[in-house]
Amino acid sequence: MPKDFLKGVRDRYDVVVIGSGLAGLTAANTLARAGYSVLLLEHHYQLGGMATWFKRRHGHIFDISLHGFPYGMVKSCRKYWTQEIADSIVQLKGIRFENPQFSLWTTFNREDFTRILTERFGIPRETVVAFFDAARRMNFYDDQHTTTREFFEQFFPGRDDVVRLLMEPITYANGSSLEDPAITYGIVFSNFMSKGVFTFRGGTDQLIRLMRAEMERNGVEIRIRSLVERIEVDAQRRVRAVWANGRRIACRAVVSNANLKQTILELVGEQHLDRDFVDETRAVRLNSSSCQVYIALKPGDGFDYVGDLLFHSEHRGFDFDAMLSRNISSRTFSFYYPDIRPGSDRYLIVSSTNARYEDWAHLSPEEYRRSKQDLIDTTLDCLEQYVPDIRRRADHVEASTPCTFQRYTRHWRGASFGTKFEGLKVSKELPQQVPGLFHAGSVGIIMSGWLGAVNYGVIVANEVDKYLTPAPVRV
Ligand SMILES: Cc1cc2nc3c(=O)[nH]c(=O)nc-3n(C[C@H](O)[C@H](O)[C@H](O)COP(=O)(O)OP(=O)(O)OC[C@H]3O[C@@H](n4cnc5c(N)ncnc54)[C@H](O)[C@@H]3O)c2cc1C
Image: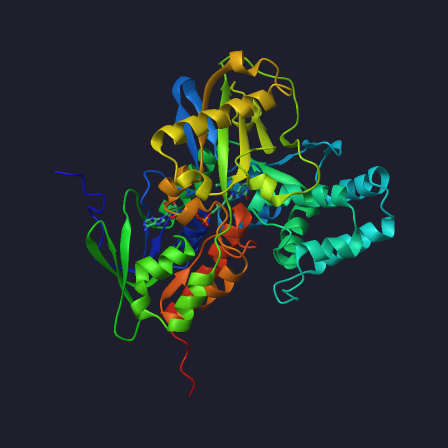
């Protein structure tokens, strides 16, 4: 008999959360804390979604998306998770750029960027101040038509070196390009610039362990290997139940952390939705995907400090297409030293590149294997200049592609960073189409990444709370 992963699950809950990415986890925890009965269903065998890790022979643990997040995570984790989680967040101080135009180290905050822009790039201080202030002032209700390219052009006309410094890290962080709305850039960039780049000491596995313990304390029923196949709605289009592993579980509300388009077009189905809304959903563009190469040094071997995050490129100027190309000329290296996992003696490196799903999805098995090997080989060649003799010293090397992310998260096209900006509107309007159905997950660029996902989980949990709490009757 196959194992029943839903054994012991009740027939009815206030809320079912589909997916355990950071937005799903945070929504589940917030709603359980507010007193609702919550069932969290995750199709994978591990919680965390893209906030994940994997273990390999000889005790190596690789983090997938722990390259860095803004300081705002400290406040969000303290408020919506626990003090212990917030206290484990530490700053990465060595952010490094190596490219044909410049070679520099920074703490990646406003003060240091002001120094670099004025002293190294010769930009007048007033221009730098005006740029930072304009970026900081941006918010969701602002002009959504100015592109990031136009925004840069206002302050740094003709300076592709400055654009590269300001844009390259954000493209790696969320897949956005110069054609995306400037507000997405302004919000994300300013979040980082407030205090720099932060990470989680203890690793992603420890974070998710602590989150799981907190959810259990608050009474969330958690099930892994539980695939939600369908969201059931009634004749008035209100949410009634979910179907998971072939079983019906009734609920008053659903929070879907699955990809926005999948939630609407597959789990609900367009027959239950207005034509215009379906068209709008179809038109939402998915954000880009990623490839990674994971390298662990032999136990007992290590390397001198070469920085924490290194934006390496052999390309001149900021070129989004070149960053996505299979012919890789740009990589971000995350260097993990033993102190990231106290008690460990391991040195690991994760190389990330933005990638196109189409370049990987249609290869034959043999071409796919060869392309992955090529990705590994060219990455090791590049890494040699920072960690000499890496081929001989590496104990374990492997690669992932957009197909890997698609397989583990079920996201269409392996989209690592949710949707483009227009996805946020569709995500927010979903409960008007299907009362009781909410979407929380990476959308609209600004609600993506660890911080964006956690914060969107809270925002959506509050919306669910309003929906489930009847308004007081006026007399
Ligand atoms: C390579 C890479 C590097 C990254 N680096 C960083 C970084 O350094 N800093 C940063 O802030 N962000 C980074 N990110 C982005 C960040 O990890 C994500 O934006 C964030 O974790 C997404 O959270 P989410 O809540 O949107 O859900 P996701 O993580 O996308 O999780 C969705 C979950 O839903 C589950 N699911 C889907 N469909 C179903 C179904 N039908 N039934 C049950 N379960 C289902 C999936 O299995 C998954 O667990 C990176 C992402 C990638 C891929």
